[in-house]
Amino acid sequence: MKILVVGSGGREHAIAWKILNDNPNFELYCIGTNAGISEIAKCVELKTIEEIADFAQQSKIDFTVVGPEAFLAQGIVDEFSKRGLKIFGPNKKAAQLESSKVFAKQFMLKYGIPTADFAVFDDPNEATRFVEKKDEPLVIKADGLAAGKGTFVAKTKQEALNAIDLLMRKKIFKEAGAKIVVEKFLEGKEVSALAFCDGQTVVPMPGCMDYKRAYDNDQGPNTGGMGCVSPVSHYDKQMQHMTYKLVFERTLEGLQKEGIDYRGVIYAGLMITKQGPFVLEYNCRFGDPETQVLMLLLKSNLLEILQATVERQLSRMKVDWFGKAGICVVLASGGYPENYEIGYEIKGLEECKAIVFHAGTKKVNGKCVTNGGRVLNVCAVGETVAHAREIVYREIKKIHFEKMHYRTDIGLNV
Ligand SMILES: Nc1ncnc2c1ncn2[C@@H]1O[C@H](COP(=O)(O)OP(=O)(O)O)[C@@H](O)[C@H]1O
Ligand SMILES: [Mg+2]
Image 1 (cartoon, rainbow, N blue to C red):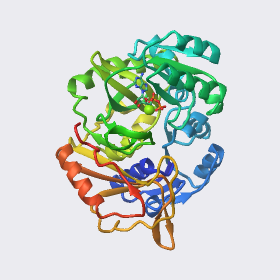
Image 2 (cartoon, helix red, strand yellow; image 1 turned 30 degrees about the vertical axis):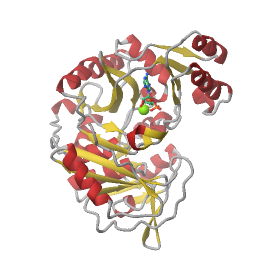
Image 3 (cartoon, helix red, strand yellow; image 1 turned 120 degrees about the horizontal axis):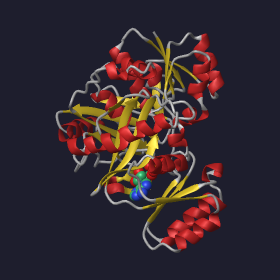
Image 4 (tube, rainbow, N blue to C red; image 1 turned 90 degrees about the horizontal axis):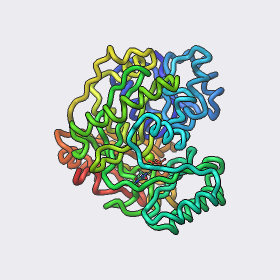
C-alpha cells in the first residue's frame, strides 16, 4: 500500500514510523520533509490542498493521514473526498471545533459539555467595557487559528485590556482575532485527552500531559510544546470515565444533532478541576508532541484504526495499548521560541538508544543539521514514568548540537 502523511514535524515522523513499524512493506510518502522522515518516506514539497490532492491521485496513494490543523480547516478532507481519495481527518465543517473557538464554546454550551463561563465579542469597545467590570483573572482567546499563540491568560485587568487591544485593534492575528472569547480562569491541572471518532463511536486514547513553557517549572514563554508524558496521575480511571460521559459522549451527540460527520481525532484540552473535567478547547487532529508518545504506547495496528475510523467501523476494532509509560523530551534550539539559529550539526544520533523523532532537522552533505526551533523529540517507554524518564534523560546526554536546550523536568511529579 501507498500511504501519504501530510506534514513534516515530530508528530508526522511518529505517525509514519508507527505505520511502517506495523507494516514494513508499505511505501510511505510525505508532504514536507526533515532528516528523519526523509529516511523512511519519499518527501515532496507542496503548498496547496489542490496540489496535494493532484499528487495523491497521480501517485495512486491508497490512504492519506493529515497532521496539521491548517489543512483540515482549509478543507483538505473535502477536496480528497470529492475526488474519491481516502483520507483520515475531519472535513472542513467538522474542523470548526478547532478552527473557531466561538463555534466550539457555543457548541459546548448547547450540549452541556463542561467548559468555563464565557462571553463572545466582535467589537473591541464592548469587550473593553465587559472586562472593565470584572475583577477576577480572565482568559482572552482569538476565535480563529493563531498557531497556538491566540490565547492570553490575563491575571490582571490591564493584561486583559492589552490582549483585547492586540487581537481586535492591532489585529496581530488578522481575521482570527475579529471575534474573541472572554472566559473565566479555571484552576486545576491540564490533560490532553485524545480520542478516535468515526461519527458513531468514540475510542479514547491514554491521557497525556504536555509542557508548553520553554523552561523548567513552567517558566518562560509559551512554545509549541517542550515535552509530553503519559499516563498522568490526575487523570485516573474515575476522571477518564467522567470525561467519557461528560465530554466525549456529549460531543458526539452534539455533532450528530448538528449534522456534522466527524471522522478523525477529537482532542479535548482539559482542565481537571475540583468539579471535574472542563474543556479548554478542542483540537481536530493528533497533538504534537502527544502523538510521539501515543504512537509508542499503541499496540494495535495504527493504519487499521485510521481506516476503520474513515469507514465508520470503529466499534468493531480492538484498540490495544501496551499499558506502559511513555515520555518525549523536545531538544530545541537555544532561544526558541524567540530568536534562535539553525544550521548546526547534530552529533551522537547513532549512539543514542532512545527513539528519536525528528522535527526541525535537515540533511546537508550527508550530515544532520538543525533546521528549526524544535529540533528533535527524544522518546522512551518504561514500566513507569520514572523508568521512562531515566532512559530518556540518559540517552539525551549522547546527543549534542550548538546551543541545544531542553527541559529537565518532563515527567517529574505527574
Ligand atoms: N479558562 C482557562 N483557565 C485557565 N487556563 C486556561 C483557560 N483557557 C486556556 N488556558 C490556558 O491557556 C492555554 C492555551 O489555551 P487553549 O484554549 O488550549 O488555546 P490554544 O491552544 O489555541 O492557544 C491552555 O493550555 C491553558 O494553559
Ligand atoms: Mg491548546
